[in-house]
Image (cartoon, rainbow, N blue to C red; front, side):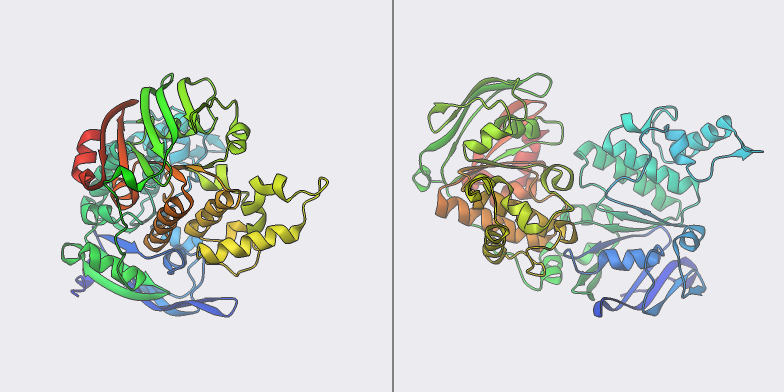
Length: 500
């Protein structure tokens, strides 16, 4: 592997080791980053990516090893020193101030003032310069809270650049972005590349790696398993480096005889401003994907079936009976399960134990004279923990917040399997989930659908998810149903073109 010339090297980390509670999570990892380079950092959750970049950002101290910025070696980086050296981290979870303006956010922490009086004109001037430099067309006087997620992310990048960032670390930056917002983000990253900014780009989306990165580094279990130029890396090689093997393809069926009776029938379903005249059926044992870019209405359609939009019009039949839930409580009572796109805010109780999170919708069944025994929750969790391969301490009292994203999602899936849901509505079920956990989730969905005659309605903006797991796909665009494919008809280019 060619090491960049020394005058181009921005950062070199050598033999980095780090332990928590006596358990070593980084085993002598190396990393280098050159000026104007985008390094894709890949690996399953728990591989050590976050620990490594937090050491570079000064949030953690390495137990051993060295970090060199330019020609200077540092052994005691902290957040302030890393910031002074030009290192910035853009987290997946936004860290802006939504009630302040764009200009105020860009200058946050460094407001221009004289004798304690803020210079608003200098603040706007600084914001305009940062935004225009990156080709971002956003009014600096707008409140950040009124912007779309993608625009807010660009404002965070503008803030970093206005503070002379030389090294940018981006953690899953496109997880909640539409394709148009992703394209805009990539334009901004390419502009930064031209300015000589080096970037470490953490992602689970392998299709992005070839589009935006120059090199790829893969971590597995705290060790470096692959470093390669992007143009020389195949998808199969990257997956093998991440999980130590290959992902087996899942079975799909073209035959209607493979599935059971129609379990859900939707006719001319509409929701003002989101979607109109949507019709489809879902059969027992079938996985049906509603595919569309963010804003297509697919997500809101799934929410409407679960009772989150009772104002919707049209007809929904559940097992041939008209079904019009007034709230999610009605849907749960009809054995419909639901996973929201934002599992941490809308799906899980993050400061509660894993057993409690899994058992919530089953409490009425556990209850005896109004009392629920903790033992029943623990038995249920340990049962599904084994079946779903939930990686945890195998402790029912462990807080769900301490699990990786993929394992949190498995707990929430177990929630609906435990209460015998017959229809599952899953919104972006593997968003922010690593490739190994995705494999486990897809196999679980396929097995549970087939063996338990569950109908699964999966809404997603990830075309690879559709080709991996769906038996049939309904493509949506701007609130309309534009195409339908099944079995071997499903391929990436076809569904992307239809959605566009």
